[in-house]
Image (cartoon, rainbow, N blue to C red; front, side, top):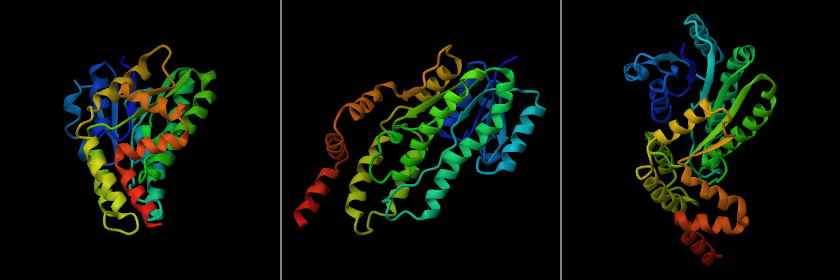
Length: 285
């Protein structure tokens, strides 16, 4: 019997890639998304081991219905990949409160709700793996990504606490931190930035940052690097508490941890082009 794994946010990008990758590695995959129609082609890619599953992580009734379907299929979850995610991009001063709430509802509260639903069967089995998809942004927060960064920083803390709570029950918890990945998610975030390109007082800064940001995702590796990290977290005897995808981006975290904050800020400014905007603003004071 194949180990069963539930992946949220599986309709595109990282979630879709993880579903197909894990199915071909022998897992039985329950691929969940809010809209079942977006999953219609996914089952055909998984060698018969992918089951599409409608689920909205922000809706407790939807989560309960999805877990009933899994039980009715005779499956006991070994793995949970909390991938469903939402973002909001723009100056913190300008972003509406409802966008803050929507991001946290999906990235933090939704993740927690699905995890709560999965834990009883994992504890009863005395084994299991939970893989939370975080982000490098959860540790290195660029300007105009504050809401998304805050939600992913919350995932870091939640995962640490959960990992330590579950030690006696044989359930292991890992965080996978993707950097820039070539998926449609990046283009969607750039569209959100475009709302503020002409909006004072941040318009010039947003325009500069957006021009840099739009170049990152098309040049980045595909989501397979994340799927590989997820697979290792699910199968290694001693999975890491943290993975970076692609692994070479670990150098950025090392710089963040070792350098003074002021120097890190200046390096990031230079990388994303905002140093010129700072100098211009300083000249006007």
